[in-house]
Image 1 (cartoon, rainbow, N blue to C red):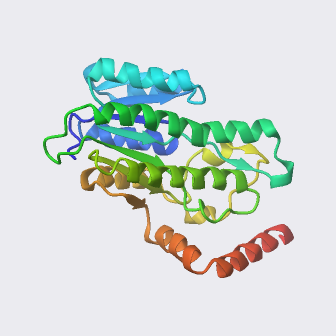
Image 2: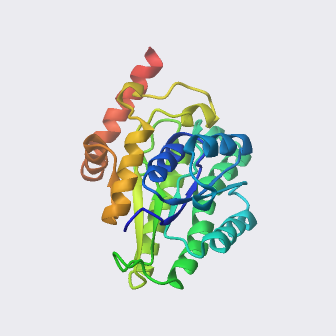
Length: 270
């Protein structure tokens, strides 16, 4: 799919990976629809992007509200007449023992990481099914759902976050099968550790993230997203070791369990 003049919706665009994706795609001439909860951050990003109003629409709101999700899609179609790519990037972390998680925190994480993805994907897929195919690839659109390399291997004290990303994966793959004849590509992005403010914004215990030195820049993630749009990739890994981690866990789950228990015990002893 060509990026120039494509209408691309990015959630969680006010910081980190979302902002990096917006900058990367703006350079390629995309028409961007950006959303986040903080209006001041959206205003700042709009200024930094320095692109014409004809190629940009910023809408602040809370994706935990299904009504806002529908409004976001409606306003996008009203402005640009179509949606070529949806990037469900907004996400919220949580660090706490499973038995200590307050029900309010569980609901907030689940609504942000799962419900919003479902609501937006449903609304956008409906639009895509009814619009004409993109001439270059004959595709009607693409939905990219941001998951995590720990979707199938929760780290200590991050069970709820991991479970929410596992739900995103199952939803994405099910949607891919259901829309297989609709010329809509459903993609899953598996970022690993990334240098963003994600860990500072998470709910629960404020602890230092493990393996910080292995983190990559959000710009690298954004470049992989651009490549996934151009190549219409289904599964997207940012680095080779992210892919290795996921595959090793799937084939050797007992070994990875032992490794993470060892790391957690060493961390507690330090």
